[in-house]
Length: 201
Ligand code: CO
Image 1 (cartoon, rainbow, N blue to C red):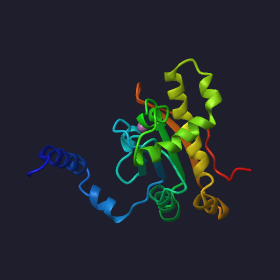
Image 2: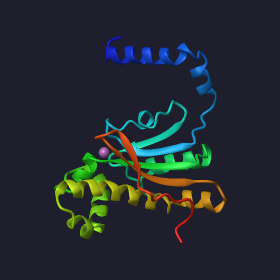
Image 3: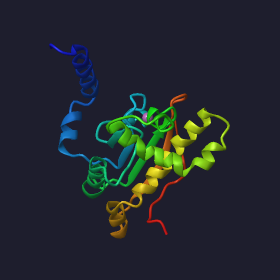
Image 4: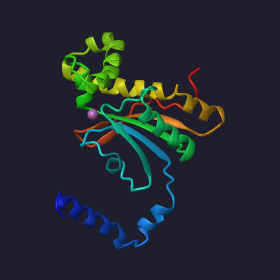
């Protein structure tokens, strides 16, 4: 193996662990994909979706980007949401942010250039919408942490207004959207208690 042999080595060991006690493990996965959950999380390497909820391959459909942003004009994200809801028929969409998120921190910083600034601008808007609450917090760390929460809450709101989601609810499909936050300090998830399963009134 010419490039990155250690990764192929790790891959062989990983595959072997799965087939050791269950030789048909991968064959079964080939046959069907039926996850019950769509996870929309941050691309941060410290927040590996399957690992932190202890899920095996096949159990979680995943979309990750910088700052776990859902935007109606982002065809990548919206296509994932559509496929998850209309084809896989997941029952739950989880937006999971995390504390100490670099994408969220960037929304407090100076304007950057290129695609990253276009992306971060979505989070800057959330910051501006909640400027009063954020300015009332004691320090920058508290503001950073709170914007991590507020950003998740905003993405749940955006999701619950997407035509794909509204159509699913209109035809009676069971679909819950949840907002969670992951704490790097203890490895634990917290439910922000903004779950919705029907259109906003
Ligand atoms: Co992040």
